[in-house]
Amino acid sequence: MDWEAEGLLEGLEDDDHRKARIELLDYLHGEGCEVAELKQAVAEDRLVLLPVERLLAGDKTYSQRQIADEAGLELDHLRRYRQALGLAVPDPDSEVLGNADLEGAKDTAAIAAAGFSTEDTLEVTRVLGRGMVRYAEALRTLFAQTFLEPGDTELALARRLQSQAEELLPLSSRLLDHVFLLHLQQLLRNDVLGIAERTSGKVSDRTETAVAFADLVGFTELGETVDVEELGGLAGRLSKMASEVVEQPVRVVKQIGDAVMFVSPDTGPLLDLALDLVHAADEDPEFPQLRAGLASGMAVGRWGDWYGRPVNLASRVCTRARPGSVLVTEPIADACGGDGYRFSAAGQKRLKGIGDVPLWRARRDSPDGSQPKIP
Image (cartoon, rainbow, N blue to C red; front, side, top):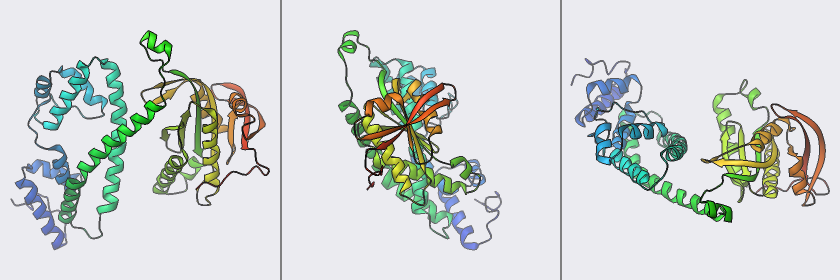
């Protein structure tokens, strides 16, 4: 194939890079890549990723309609399932899917046959899709940071990425299974099915919950003065800091940019975490200060997230906290009073969408008000 005539060597002046591009194109074409696919990959600057992409895709021998028929699913159900995962939905009759897609559809059909509600199953699938895309993005970054070498030709990098993907992706799949089971076990240890739920046959998702938000002070202003990569690094360090101080029964619900949300059935451990986290940031001269806000009340835990007044209230309280401080609502102060904490009145604060709320600053009850060192 005359790749220069096809316009796929344009912009490559170095002989070594031209030869590497030709060898990579020859290899991919020999593996079944059409010229149009290669042109698109070059135009999108992802030619080096094509071997890994083909490894992940496997053989493409099925259409969406064929998979639905073989799995015993309605075509619309399969479409909604892929949409819930955040995946593109192919033309029903285009043969762009493989054996892994067929096995996934069969598993979906088995779950439906077990009696689960379709709508509820799709909600769980959306949670899975959101988590998996973040994991995939993180893994992609890890691969790039680890296996890129200065001066790489496209051929050398493509071969290295393909080799590492063949070796490491099976390990990643097993790790996913293991981590899922560990988290499920941990959740079950802290879950309680009461008499009312066992009698009615329905699980209540409303429960008395303490909620905390912690965010980086001045993050928005920093965005106007520092590089975007530095901002991302700060958010990553916040995530790492949160994971290092969190302990059961407190759980990290999510991180949204510069803010992390936590929940706990017990107020004391959540207040401990907030104080520890704010103190850890204060101890790091290269890290912005944090502030935190806590509230409690009846909240709804659904599909891996939490909703209700205490969630909204804790978020608003956090925005009114001073840098390096923890601000709490009166029920939090009442629940933790006399348990090694000191609370000072911060006065009535007008919270957006909520109104005037009396708030309290929380500290540990030590002679100088200091916090313990975080390992």
